[in-house]
Image 1 (cartoon, rainbow, N blue to C red):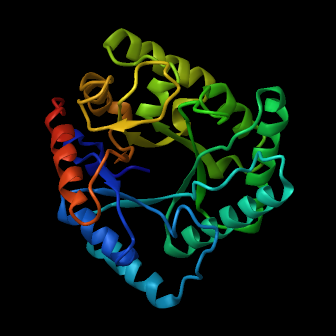
Image 2: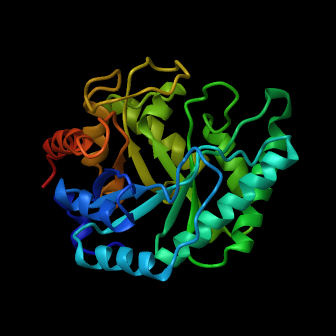
Image 3: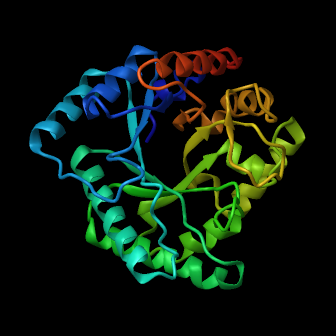
Length: 296
């Protein structure tokens, strides 16, 4: 349950994706240094299959950093290599194994959400692909008991990826056995690129009614806040700074001033320079978001 403080518009958990190059605990201190109140991290290189085990010292340092910090929540983004819907049995097996280990490490660290891209497949195999993704999630959840939940992230629909249609996410979720450990992360750039219009008040209201009908508003646990370099329905995933792309400022203002969404973490994945200089890019985008909060 959200705390009374998190119900205040100015106390919304705004944050960004931070590097763990200097340690899991340093990512939290980096978030704190730019005034973030939420953080997202990878647990390992997002382009490598190999994962190191977490020793107790690293776990303790991370937990202490969280306890001592105003950063109220940290979430994890799963490896980009995962494809639970792959027809290649070796790739699918490796994907399930890494997803399971990432979930296990989330449980060890006390991290509530692991965000994953659903995967990809051929159009003529969509139904089977979605079933395979759900089956893979079920296996990972069964092999990593604990509170950490998987959040399916909507995609832009680039290439052969699935998840650009909210119905894809619905169909995967419906086949997950433990409904308490599955939810949604909504990426604004991806949704816009996939063809969902929510950049002005009436379209915004219509979109969230559609979202609620298909997935249920309560399934939404995290936002990825990104503007888009490409036009509505482009099916191209290219993130842009807040207010500098085709989305503009309006949809972010609408979300930030929507009481339903005040307690939900909002994570920037906007373009940034190489760490640590990129922290100033996040700080600039956070300032833009904070300036859009008008409800008090």
